[in-house]
Length: 271
Length: 232
Image 1 (cartoon, rainbow over the protein chains, first blue to last red):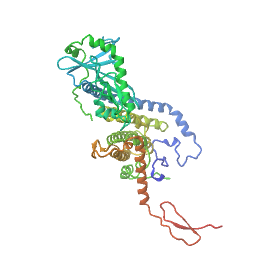
Image 2 (cartoon, each protein chain N blue to C red):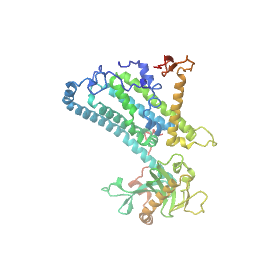
Image 3 (spheres, each protein chain N blue to C red):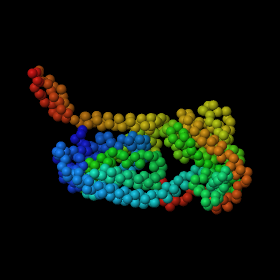
Image 4 (cartoon, chains in turn cyan, blue):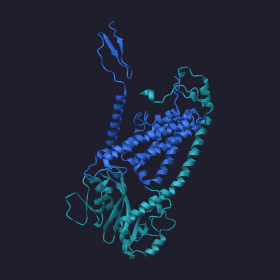
């Protein structure tokens, strides 16, 4: 079989680059090394370094060019995915706005000095009549394989979870990934009272806090439930204050902090 | 030993089948096993690798006079890594869903020994057009192998091809086929089938009854010839 593999080819003597001095196992490999290759290596070390430096600089330049081209597209995609997810878990609200958690309280308009990218946030949705429907919050915790990231809708007024959508998971294909693909399981998160309780198949008692777990994916199902429960518990106080204070008029909020809506993308081109 | 001379068409076709990187040379097995659970993933990985291989081969072949021999491997890796980074960002921008499914394996194209192997063994000492033909052939061979595996695994493991369901509800998917072991099963069976096919093509050596005291020395692929036994 080895005669098929053109990996090691003999004589490099015809090579115009003169790289016969790189220790190739050529016909003359056994001859005592002449002083020539070593002398050349020493003399050219500046050239070696400069070659790699120039190559690195050119490579970096092209990578930056492609990065500048691709970054807005990647960000637009992420914003669109998030916007669609917010719409989905809140049941299609008319308006949405981002609220940032600053010093234990939610605010729609953080001071310009605050680094909003680092702040925790929720997305508030309003229905057509201007009444708040609930909030959508993203969360992530380890599942069976890797971190499961999801977003869920929550109504702080009634304490109900409104819906759930997994944003990112590497759960086992065919088993754990049903937390994304099993529509019955996903629908089980609509209008259930928090904190959620996971029940195995056939063990439900009809309680309004029960979510039916997936047979064969108990750990992944439980992880999803835990993620939501932990997040709801963590946000409970600021959310209650936000809800009790009454939410600002949607129009004003929308002006001050529009959430990433599914922006009409000029580029499209997604699968 | 004189360097093998090949025709341009040999350069192109060799990598597709006779020296297929995955099925014959057994190179690049990491992506071949890891991301062939669906046809779409296999196709995206094949295309990304094809792009990286072609780009690197063209560049290495064009720059071979400028790259000092002592740092050639570093230079090749730098070139390959640049193309991989570009492919990674382009995939993330154009087909984000598939980019998410391929995960780290796009970045790992850098260490695909098939690509570095083609630079060192071929592109670095051949004219640009021959290097391009070789890269196209090898890249197509890689893609062919990935699609074969992806096709088998998706059809059996998910009952679909490119996401289109093939069977009715009565079909119970063989989930093992889209899990990692399924990759090994598929590759093993493909290699077994290929080896069996190669074996059948060879001239069969029929056992004969030689005169007493004569043993038969059989060399692989050669016609059997009688040799006088040494009873010394």
